[in-house]
Structure formats: structure tokens, C-alpha cells
Length: 432
Image (cartoon, rainbow, N blue to C red; front, side, top):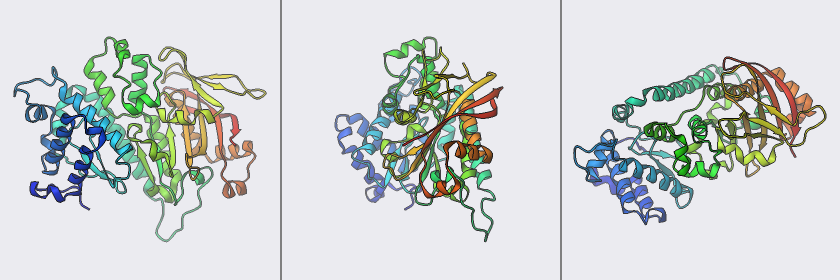
């Protein structure tokens, strides 16, 4: 199927993307909102007719919301509010009635033009003409946008560097080292879920602990606690809520993981945590990068772990790993850096557990700060560190190839100027 060519208006009825739109607007989540139905049909129709580049906030306000031609989107946020509600309704549809749809419709944050992506083949219907309009709307936020672009470029570069020279023609691939042999395999997709830097910042600004439930409903910065942000400009708050940024530590870990995947790199993909759905966790391998403070998905694993992140007053207290059941010689708490970028010791955990359906694996790299998260990836990428981990766990090379081994490990990293300089294995637990 080709989902990148504009469809003529008379052909919409036979276009499976338009048929998807009709199923969506006929579903239960959309029955109580005529405006959201009209909005979705309008932006989908314009996109399929090749006019995605015209879908600016001002254009939609004029054409669909009947705003005067000189109205100011800075003073009237009704289009943004409705598009945000539409994203929530689409999320609800594809989690429930549309969970078996072969195509997914999404509205990227920062854009008003939908994209249609095949469940099997990834993103489609990308219209480069929309980029100038996007740039004009966010010129005031250029530094943030540049950070996001840099992150994406780093990730793409990392993939190409890792992919180059993976296999030479005619040379079979060597077997993967443990524990990567449990994370990457030919039977499963391995999905790397990076941290949401904006989520971490918004927690600090609002002095809220946050939760996965709030995060999935995208309500984190929309409740009464928003007043705690105080002097932060509303447009910045909105950008933090809608943009997608991750950290250098995550990019560094992605580089390491792609290299460790070796010949199975084609089985690996990267996802932003806001784009993940609960049902995606079934029947796949997963890697979660970041602690609950930046990647709320890892909270699903906390009740299975001995070392758990804890924080006093959000943004005002240093985060710690609480040692639920200290063994002789261990501390009850391990305190990390107060802020990222400082000199000192930070801590991280590396955890490997079965997935929700027990037919795959979940690896979690959780640092108290970014330095710890990066150090966790570096630790696993080092052959001598992996050998030490196996020795402490009491497993042999034969064990690692004949059975699944679940564990968690606490590591300490010495950090200077925002980068880990050395790592030390502090404590280990077998799970199950």
C-alpha cells in the first residue's frame, strides 16, 4: 500500500486511510464531540488531498472554527486545545476499539497534519512542506527545537555508525554475548524506550511526583497544580507538554545497544515513551532507559525490584536508591548527585526481567541522574564488566545460553562535568 501519495477528493471513499478516519469518528470516544469529529475529518481530508503544509493553527481557526481573518492564536488557544483533546481521543480509540487496526493515525506534537503509519512498516505520509509552517510557529522556541533536532540527528548517526560494518558479506554473525542474547533475538522485536526529558523538567517545575496514569492521559501539566509553576511562561509550559526531547545519555545508550545487537539490528526500533501503549508491552523485548523520574514506564517494574528510586520533595531533594533488603556490607540507601552536571558519585541499576507475557525480556537502565543512566549502558557494553557480573551471579557461559537469567545490579559511577568516568559494581540480586 502506498500512503504517501495525495488522494483526489473523489477517491477518498476507496482510500483505506479515509475509511480508517470514518471508523474513528463513528467510534464511542467521538460520539459526544461534533467538533472533534469535524476537526479530524477536516485535517485528514486536507492531508490526503496534498494540502498538509497549509494546516497551520491560524488556517484551521479560519476555515473550521470560523475565526475572523485577523484573529491571534496567541490570544485564542481554542485550536490548540481541541487538537490536544483530539490526540487524547485518538489514543483512546487505538487502545480500545481500534487496537487491531492495520493503520494508525497520529498527529505529531507541534504539527496539525496527521500522519498514517502502517503497524508493520512504521511512519508514512510525511509531508516536508509542513516544515516551514512548523518553523514559523515555533521561532520563539528555536533553542528547544534545535535540541530536539540534535537529538534526532545523533540517534540517526548512532544507528548508521552501529549498522556500518555489522556483517561483512559471506561472514556469519557471531553469537551475542549475555545478557544481550536475552534482549535481542530473531523471534521478537526489541523496542528501546528513551526517557522523556520534558517530563522530568515538568515534574521539577510543578513540584509533583507524577505517575504513569497521569502521563498516559497527558494530564500532568493540566491540573490545578500548574499554578505552582509560577513565573514560567505559558507558551514554554505548553511547549514542554507537547514537544519530544530526550537526553544525551539516552543517545549514548542507544549507540551501545545497537552495537551489541550486532546482526539483529533490523529487529530493533526506538520509541518515545508518550507514543507507547500498554498493549505494546505484550510479546516483545523492551529496553527502558531512565528512572521513573524521566521514564514513567519503569514504574511497572518497581514491585519486582530490590533497589527502588525514592525522592523526598521533587526538585529539592537528592534522589536515592532504597535498598529494600540490605545484605551484610550494603547500605540501606545510596544517594546520588543533587543535580546532573556535578562532580561526585551517581548510582544506577541494571535490571533484566521477563516481559508481561513471559515470552520475552525487559531490560531497564535506571540512573538517578543522566550520568548514572549513561554509566549503566557503558557498564554493560564492557566485556570485563559483563564477565564480573556473571561471576557475582554465579552463572557460567553454559548457563547463559541454556536458560533465562533474571537479575538486578546496582552500580556506582564517578562523574565529572556531566560524564561518567568510571563504574563499579556495588550489589547484585537474582530475581526468581
